[in-house]
Image 1 (cartoon, rainbow, N blue to C red):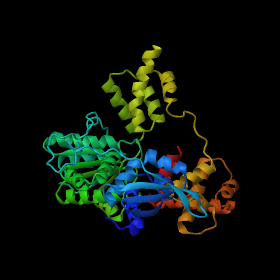
Image 2 (cartoon, rainbow, N blue to C red; image 1 turned 45 degrees about the vertical axis):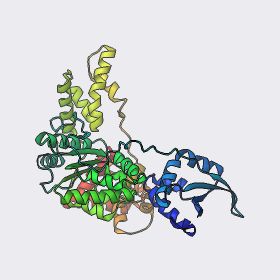
Image 3 (cartoon, helix red, strand yellow; image 1 turned 90 degrees about the vertical axis):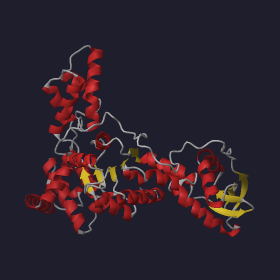
Image 4 (cartoon, one colour; image 1 turned 180 degrees about the horizontal axis):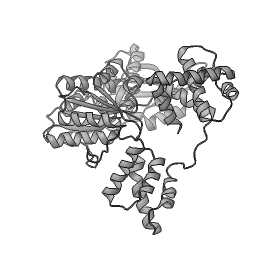
Length: 460
């Protein structure tokens, strides 16, 4: 049992657990203001700022608070609240926390983390609709698809371990994950494949932590032959979960097992991740999937039309492909067209396509402004707009200003004087020099040309 004069140490240990089980906003709002007062005679007393605070904690976080305190101080510890009523004297009114019903132990918990062998026919959570056969290949996903195929045929036996797939939302990362898992099972039904979202993995780890079953949790995952975790960026700030993943990662990789991760950003762009995990993400193959280009969008639509047996003209396909750029939207647009065609009793033509597509994306071209270009450049280069507008002469800021000026000249009708006034208050001569400089650098440096093209895609 922890001694009574160690209530601060006890609470800090509790915070370490709580921090890993709530969002950063929740942690800062509801837990950072709590002050540990005392721990004696099995009662742990914490001070909260108000009656509302007390009621909110009891309604939304009582299970987390109580189970965390049980874990740190021992079962049977009673949670007490001191509601602050006078800040000058630091006095408060004490209330007991809500008593939680005892868990019955007359039957085993149905947690999947029992220390027992995982059978080959356990649930892999793979969506059979997401296969390689209907994952259309194009220039923007070719590397990731080829790597996924190689991994599926020889999991753990290629240099692509881990396979880290990254790209924006809706570009087909999840589809590819399921395709890898399904083909792996098709080649060898005995291989234990598991697809899990980062959110579910986090929930499972929280449950295991609060029930003192972390070792069983680790044991379960260390028996998987192909582990696929989707949206790994959600583990940011979750130190406990990251630590568990680190141990699972090491064990599986050293055992010749395969790991596949997806994220909305590359490993070097992940924030609030342990460096030891990031270095492991970098160690395999990092395959980026970009938004499908026009030709790939047409191919996806034609495949969907063929599968659904729908009659749609090439003109309508071209129209949809030009205006709808996300994979997910492309998959649903044909169904929407079919439904509207049946309801309205008319053929699928350009008029109907405009009506349906107009509900998903704007068909009115957005007028580009200096402000929008400036903000897009800053977001792409991860620079604050305030710094861009400052007089600072750091190399990365100078390049960002020059890039923004060039794009403004290319994509707006504004004068050089106006562009300069809205980008760091520079004169027209500076703007002209910057535009010529970027244009010259693009002809010499493919990397700079690529940066310009990426930003231009975001401006469309």
